[in-house]
Image (cartoon, helix red, strand yellow):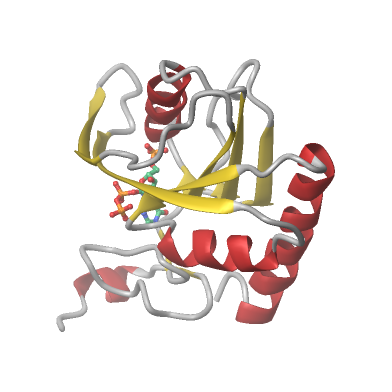
Length: 174
Ligand SMILES: O=P(O)(O)OC[C@H]1O[C@H](OP(=O)(O)OP(=O)(O)O)[C@H](O)[C@@H]1O
Ligand code: HPA
């Protein structure tokens, strides 16, 4: 067990308050990254104490620990026009940072008014996103984390807590 459901939801509420402080009267668009950030995006949107829109992108990332390599493929694009809008990119975890860097540059091409990153978890060695304000729920150590939307080969997304996956968990069938 890494984070209980109570710890996660308390931090989600404070992240929503931090973001609202940043945006004030503006109505931001929360862009949730499917599938790992589905749970987090919905909870963050519901905790946001003012009007906010929610939109989705689905991508497949092939990140590797070798930061020179890796690629991202777009599976489903946004179906809202974000030009002139304040966009919050919401993801469950920033690990190598490949996915988030790709999302920032892809969304920046659509002329939003601003881009902010909000990730529930951030692994240790990731580069910071210059010029992009970043809100992080928890800085965590290396290791595969599952639950609260995050999976290992399609499993464990529906755990309500976040947990560090053991070797036994990786080997488990079913
Ligand atoms: O910082 P990075 O090393 O790029 O990794 C982070 C990304 O990896 C995970 O998605 P994944 O590709 O596992 O797909 P999923 O969203 O369907 O779980 C996670 O939800 C992030 O989007
Ligand atoms: O720790 C993780 N858990 C699930 N998916 C991920 N994608 C990158 N890092 C992770």
